[in-house]
Amino acid sequence: MLVKTATFITSASGAGGYPPGGLPEIAFAGRSNVGKSSLINVLVNRRALVRTSSTPGRTQLLNFFAVNDEFMLVDLPGFGFAKVPLAVKKAWGPMVRTYLEQRANLRALVLLFDIRRVPRQEELQLLDWLEELEIPTIPVITKVDKVGRSHRHRQIAPILEATGLPVDAFSFFSAVTKEGRDEVWERIATVLEESPAAVPAQEDSGGVQ
Ligand SMILES: Nc1nc2c(ncn2[C@@H]2O[C@H](COP(=O)(O)OP(=O)(O)OP(=O)(O)O)[C@@H](O)[C@H]2O)c(=O)[nH]1
Ligand SMILES: [Mg+2]
Image (cartoon, rainbow, N blue to C red; front, side, top):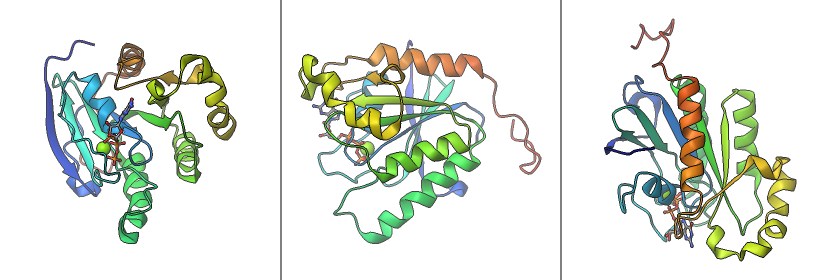
């Protein structure tokens, strides 16, 4: 993917704040601190298009970024950080679920798993929603630089077991070494090529074109 431009468009919490849905979208989800924002920055070759943080729970809104004015990357709020206020924790489910249900131009969701962690209920919940709503999923195991290559397959056994997905379903990624960048782009490009058109006119929306 040749990234000519990558531009922050807007942040939103609810559907009223989403930008017009004329471009296809790829969303990124996963627990707080898993590396969603870092992955987006590596994809678009920018050190800080998306703010990253060693304090988990920083991104508590949906953030929309346009690439080449052709499609959007959407950084979804993370979940599962203990020190986040209860109100914020409770907001995560409806915020993400509403986006997944209502965003007709969503083409796929990149779901990140930390190579060192066992998936929890929220990751599995997300996988259920994606299946229910028939949203194509690109599962990515991140921070692979933290584990020696020879330990990789042993390390991911709990992820395979919890998700029920085969190892081939996952792309391995590191924001440090940039391993996996091209593969993740390829998978995104494939999804975009399969359904490049803008949002089909919707009965209840007055026909966003
Ligand atoms: N070693 C290593 N560190 C990473 C990698 N990706 C992200 N990090 C670090 O992990 C921390 C969190 O990264 P973010 O990209 O901010 O994570 P996030 O998922 O966007 O987090 P929230 O916005 O809080 O939900 C930062 O300190 C990053 O530098 C990676 O591939 N390898
Ligand atoms: Mg983030």
